[in-house]
Amino acid sequence: MSGASLSLRVRFLSPSVGAPSSSQVRSAVSLSRASPAVLSSRARPPRGTVQTLAVDGYEVTVVRKRIKNLYLRVRPATLGVEVSAPVNASVDYIAHFVHIRRPWIERQLERGRQSRSRSQASGVVSGGWSPDRVEQARACIESQLPGLLEAWCPVVGRRPSRITLRVMSSRWGSCTPSTARIRLNLQLGFMDGRFLQYVFVHEMTHLLAGGHGADFQRLMDGFLPQWRDVRRELNRQIVW
Image (cartoon, one colour):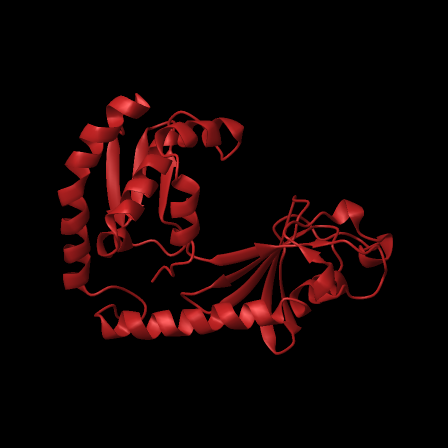
């Protein structure tokens, strides 16, 4: 379950060659609707290619993937700007994509800087956690796990084979369905208990449904009817 980075994806609705205006932005992107002029007609970079672009003073890391959408992320831990892009997206197209989102990028970078200051003031050191903070977070989560297991295993109908607590830089939690192993971000130990419950149930649900498609959402609706509201609030938080 990701959440460490703040991400955005947009669709350029205008088929014109020029850069889209902010009034032409919505919350999904599909290159299939873009003009051929903004797509690369030259040799396509292979999947997994990593490029660095300079856009409006930002150093933007671009990773080419077999995807249809452009995804823009700001990593609070490093204050880095990243774009996941289809292999057939031109450099100019990606630069336009970043350029029109400059206000959003600035807001996320400022949130990241503020979070970093708060984290350092509360005992989390740059580049890692202090040993005392790790133990505090671990103790807090471990004190809640028996109750969560007792409450949710009968509801979900599955039980994790192992739960690991760790510092995560890009996720609130993760699950390996084939081994029934669940990993939880230690930061949840310093947050409201409803966030820990949501992440726990989210990862437990992956023991029944992989991905986040219709089956997963249907199960979550039955388990935690307000899960979308909690997820929205959790995703506003910054991972240390």
